[in-house]
Image (cartoon, rainbow, N blue to C red; front, side):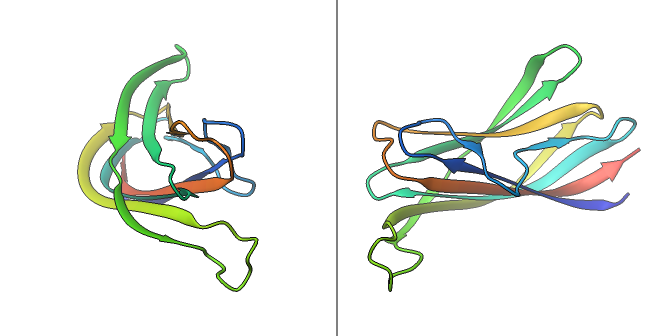
Length: 139
């Protein structure tokens, strides 16, 4: 059974509460038909402007039927408040949250995983989030 590492990411744009796609990074993963994905762990992060929070989750959908089968919420823990470029005063200061969690989940072939996110009351400024899913593909 081959091991897989699936990085997914998204971007929070000023003025919008819902996370959108981040150029160059997928926000979805299609489990190959004829194989099943066994997720063993997830690691995730979110960075949004200071004072904001983010909620992240994975929706697993049956693309043929067009319905979400299950949702896995990704609980985040506050880590720190800092700027990724402190030498540039125009770089925003962000609140960073992360998690790493062992998980056993089985997703059938032909399903699509959607990495989703939303932030709370304030939606000014940009932010980003990502998740890395590790597991096995089995026949």
